[in-house]
Each structure stands twice: as structure tokens, then as C-alpha cells.
Image (cartoon, rainbow over all chains, first blue to last red; front, side, top):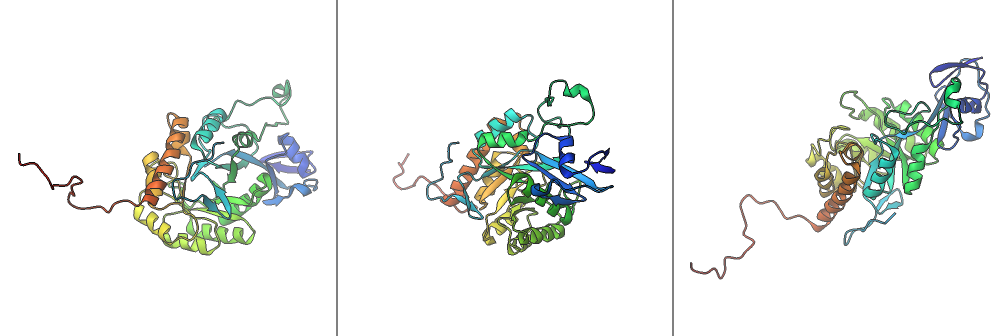
Length: 63
Length: 287
């Protein structure tokens, strides 16, 4: 199963939590979206489907 | 943190029922490193700072040097993982609140999605709503902005929209249920100061929500002027973070905002065309 994680093609990632763990150890200050829709923290164990685009975001400096 | 001393006769800034001792909101964009940012936050006396939401990724040139997560992790190549959250640590250490923004969004849809992600990431329904309409000037897109504001208010957000200095748009945003309006002084990052003081004054005169001058401030006198015109607060980033001495400029901005606010409350003298002596002519010696 192929997904896109923060704009990069990835394989072997089956849940939102896997996707988060693939890019960061942090859990605080993290948000995830699948195909543009926010996935609440309580649903991070949600299974991903082939072709899903996952975004894992965090705080950065900004005005 | 030391609470800011309010000017005599002044009340605290209240936005959506939350009170702030400081009338300065600091953006964190452009800081050279986190230590300097922390020092600037403290010197500014601010109680609220903005952050942006971005992909977890390699730290930017402006961030701290990355630390391997485990010894040898840097050599272990894929999968790539990055330390995160450090800006939040800085904010927490400083004891100030976080105001996420939707910087970089060009459509209402993008901005609404970003706001929802920010709410999830930071546990706050406060959002600095930015919907940009033009890459060169970074001026707000009024149509998309109002659309996003209406959606987010319906969604239960406390919306603080970055807007142009248009009094009609400011009123429309207030009518939409925004908790404040944040008209620009000048385009983001230009440091040009208050380009249209008349419009800013009109917005302040008619608004029933706090007016926060956001963007375009270059130096302390710009911030003071915005306050003198009637703004409830000033939001600035670049003027501090890219100053030659950000910590000293942060202190200057704190003082400027306080001075401008006090001058506004004190009531300035009317401007006159000709001189009016302050020393009496009565009792002049015949010399």
C-alpha cells in the first residue's frame, strides 16, 4: 500500500499514528490530516487507504 | 512574568472574555534562534505570541541545530524523523499564550482546514486568520477572508482576522462574529509604519471589538502611533525579530505601546496652524 506522507511517497504505513511516528517522536503540538481533513487525536489509530495523502504538522515560528 | 503596569485610568485588554496585561502581541517569525526569541518575548512583556503550522520536517535555517533523536540516529538515514515542538517549549517556558495563525493560506478552504488542524495541535480555538490574496504584497483577500471568518465563527473559533485597513471590511468581519479585527499598518514585513492613519482611526472609532494593528510596524514610533490612533493592541514580529538587537527592540516596543496607549487616554492637544505661547506675555519687563 502506497501513501503520500508530507508530500513524499511512502510504503508500509498503515495507520495515522504510524505516519506520525514515521516523522516525529513528538505527540504534543502535532496535528494530522488525511486528504485535507483533520484527524482528531482520538482517531489516530484510524487505518489508511491506498493513495491517502497524510499531512503531519507542528508549530513553527510565524508572525 | 512581571505583569505590565497599566496606565492610570486604563483597563486591561479583553479579547473574547480573556484579559491581557500587555497590549503587545508578538509574532515569532524571523527569530535567529530560540534563546533570542525567549529573551525578546520576556523583554516585550507580551502575554500572547503567534506561531505557524507547518509540516514536521528538517528545521529551517533559523531554528536551532537539529539534535539526533538517539545516538547514531543521524547516520541511520531513512526513515527520517525530526525533533519537534521546541517553539512550544520556548512559549511554555516564557509563560505566555499561543495564538496559531493560518499564514500562507490563499483560500478560505485552506485557512479553515489549517485552523482546524491548529485547534487539534495546540488545544486552542483562538486563530489569527490570514488569507492572502497576492504573493508580492501579501495583502489579504477580502472575499476569502470574510468567507473563512464566517465558517470559523460557526465552528466555534475565536477568530482574530488579519485584514486590510478598510473600515467597511472591518465592520463586516465584526458583524460576522470575529473577536477582534486586525488591520494592517502596511504590508507584512515592510516596516513602512502606518500608511493610512485616517483609515486606522476610522476603524478604531467604529469598532465594538478590539482593534489590533497587525503588520507593517517598523520601529517604536510606528507602534506608538497605532496606539495613539485608538488601537487596543499591536501585533508585530519582524520589527523585533529582525532588528539588529531584537531584545532591545522588544523592550522599545513594550514602552512604545504603553506610551501610545497612555497618550491616547491622556488626550492630545489639538493641532494649530500658528504658534501659541506657553509662557505668558503678562508682566514682561520693558527692556
